[in-house]
Image (cartoon, rainbow, N blue to C red; front, side, top):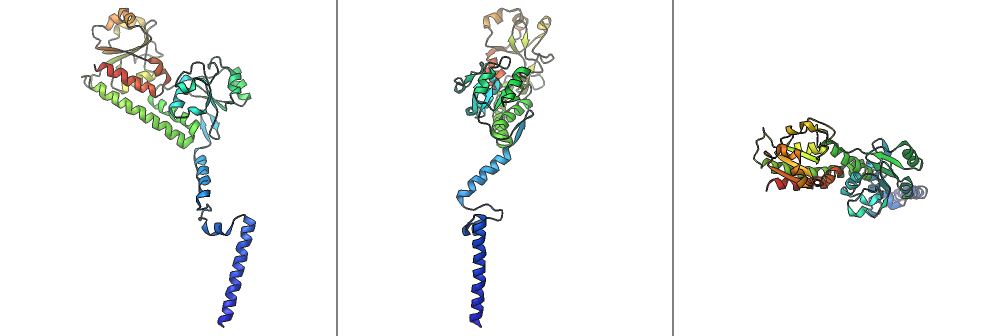
Length: 328
């Protein structure tokens, strides 16, 4: 009786073994896979887990759409016709993907050897196409002719306008991050850069609070770019938003488009003056504009306003440096 049961058991085992061998032949797997695969179907062995992780990483980041342009996978060749966008791309750590830049892109030094391709107003489309760029970043729209030339050659044009508010700057950083790093990882990197910059602003805010003004009567500031015609940071500029954030009142905030009526210049009564490093201090002091508020001005400091136009991390460092001059 026992012998019969033993024979039946052997037959059953033989059938199971035959079935497993058949599965391995038709499915391309081996017996080890049958017994080590997890319930989801992925192998537990180290050699096969890495591709699975990479696949998941790609799927969570791509495709992504920025400014109406679909980016199906991580770009490897990108051109930029905006010094501002070029700088932010490098701030985010994606500079190695740039293959072509505008004639005015000069920072950081790592991009100065790249192919130059004119500007958004007069782009060198042949240079952009020859660079193999998959995408072109620009702060302003290109002409219809240039747009058609590039798109016909397979170059996707992504327009990212400069920020005029801090919320828009955060969005700009995250959008650029998304183009190069995807909807999750790239945007997270953009958010991280923005947070670094906000931390610098918070330090500036502490410095301004130490100037001795009350919270109900904050110090008045003027951000002067050009003396004649009178060109100052108005309410619709990022520079104005930065001043307000760190505790100043921008006395030109009632106007827009960097324009302030020259006949109202006597009404400008700043406590602190930020003036462009392109302005000769002697010319400023001898100007009629300066005579209007020289009696009440507590401090004036030169600042690199080109850095502010670029809207990268250097902008916040420059603001911090300038504010520190008011503390001396």
